[in-house]
Image (cartoon, rainbow, N blue to C red):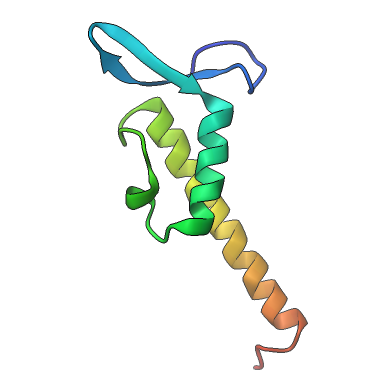
Length: 86
């Protein structure tokens, strides 16, 4: 990660183009991953960054965490309204 301690200003390396480092804002990667987790089933189809880049690794991590959190929310909700019986 590159940049300051403020997450909105932190930059992640995406890759290299024409001899220059290409970066993107960490806040954008997080937002994109959270939104993609609501739309896509598979992280590899959702990720717009190279998988081995800093941005790609952060995207995958946030995508997985969001998917897991959403699955837990759905499970708890199903128990709460009585859709799941033992």
